[in-house]
Length: 403
Image (cartoon, rainbow, N blue to C red; front, side):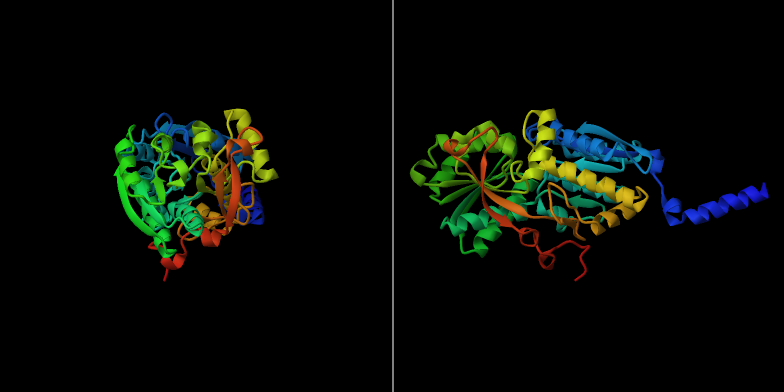
């Protein structure tokens, strides 16, 4: 027996650190998709985000380090208390290792704090507030697809260059809208433009008429809608109905536009919108290949949230494989160390503040006459290199950054 024990010990020693460090907690890697399944942001996340995460798990092979990967789903109902309770339940009782998507910025800000408290991981794709890698950054979270700073950099600069230098903001009254207005206004002013006014609307409003009348009366060259979801779609349609854009009087800027929004509005209503995005399905052969697979499951083309959910889940699983463990601290370090080269990003990297750095793109929505096939909606204006698209660390308020 003593000889057998010594032989086993010798065998483990020969196997080296890779064997010793291989550890999957609870014998399963569990990913929780916490998203809006039924509310106004469900078209920007919901079933699409769930499908994207499950596609990544399937394409990875369904197991990592010999252990199964499980995906569970919950609807946060756009209520912070529901999201926080579910995150605590998942981390404490469900043994969830990583929570994905987290559309709705106030919810993302709350849940990333829970991830830090519980020493687990949260990867944000649906939400945009730049505070997630600013004053509210955590060592346990990654902000992946886009943020309000990048959106403002792209759309703000593009329109200022066209001489559209006076802006009025129609802003959704929640964390994302506030951050988007602040970041874009900063870009406008830094580039010689002026902000002539702003008004905030409840995110559940169905009637934008009074807000739009004030925007129209401002005579600003640009009416910038700092919001998302069905209220954004309704606002653009109402702006057209009110004649804001007739004869080039005012330009509507969608500061966050999903391709599903364009499909819902139709090109007649959406044509001419200038927008900034992290992903377009028809950009190149790699994006088209992924999008074809996604379309087969969802019967629509993916947007940057879907693409980000897939890419970030794949990056997370690759990091576990490389690290030999699902320990949150070790995996986070590995994700910061490893570059991302896939259909979503080339030479993408996770910065120390949790910001995923990658190129962003400025597009204009095509006229109906310019669209040649289904979902052919965008024409490229500019490519913004990742180091220029996102807030530089020298300006960061993230407490993790050493200055």
